[in-house]
Image (cartoon, rainbow, N blue to C red; front, side, top):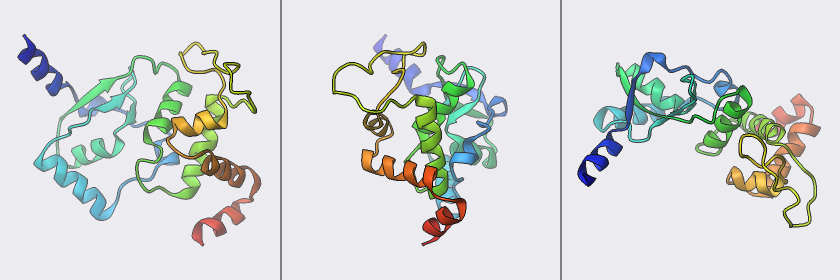
Length: 185
């Protein structure tokens, strides 16, 4: 019985790649892999397989795994492993999950990073202050904290509060031309 369970778990749920839809805002927040980095991913998938399931919402919108799906399509694969997150029912929850699952995983355009952070903070709900008690610990209908401090949001995104605050200040206070100058050095 244990062997059957482990074999089933390792196999994962396979789905036809043609039913998967990229999240419409993925490229707004995250760069595609290119060049040697993308070739390395394709070689890894061709030589091994896709070991990490593609995370999708119930309507088959890709939340995490856009580059793996892109590589699999280029390799002519028809089936890919997926994991469906049944909690991702509305567009805001999908967008929050897209950002939280992909932010900081690899080098990205700084302007896209700032936009992702600004969007995530807005969707997540930001509450200034706090006294360290449970005053901001009420959960919303999705089981997420209704509002969070920047410290909590930074922790969710695996970054320092200082870097989060810096990115938000740049995004909110600088003109587009100033941001471009900052990004290009």
